[in-house]
Length: 306
Image (cartoon, rainbow, N blue to C red; front, side, top):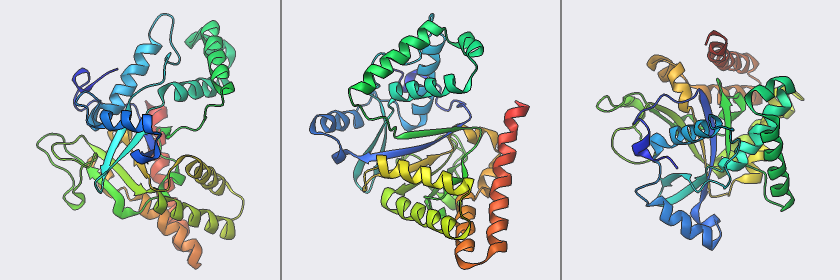
């Protein structure tokens, strides 16, 4: 396990955004609850500013090993921790499960002759067999963390409100956006460059349900509706009603300048597009949709220039 002392304080992260469900600590079994309570106050756990980097470093160590280790032997005992309103919320990393699911996706999307160059077939087959045995025990397959590289899916903005944005532009001594004073971990002290949103699950579900209803009634079957329905299904199937939902731009902030981050109102624009559809203001809805779509197409295009 990698801790704060093992990673740079403000590392450049992979160009990935994260959608995370945080469960209230009371949602866990008594045994798990005791573990997470102790974990949350531990001085050795990876802190918010270094947790993504710690995850990434652990994955790289496994992949550059000889032979590579596509999934750890045991499930991670680490988690993202968030405190709000005097309550503690936990989002377990689920590294082994996410690695297995990532391996399955990689093999499904990559020709066999190419995938073998990244991961020997015998190693991949062994990982698949371990995953099969794990599934046969009836273990849950849903993860509490979703990832997206080089972009943020537009459906991810629908569960949030513009007032829930947290933007920090500076490192130590530089401060953040004066109009959005906040701390990404809900604490104090210097924070890394960050843009994230945090909503209560009950609010997120209500907003997402509205988005699905409006799209279904005013647009019909389309890619946007399908994406919103998949997100709604995931949230209903994983999140405790009293939990939190977090959208973290994470490494994507390194693709955007300070002015770009200040001007990024993607959540507000998606919300305005949905409201425009609902109220019959179709020109407004179209303008907001095209604005947010263009922003993220430009960010995604950087992948081809990399």
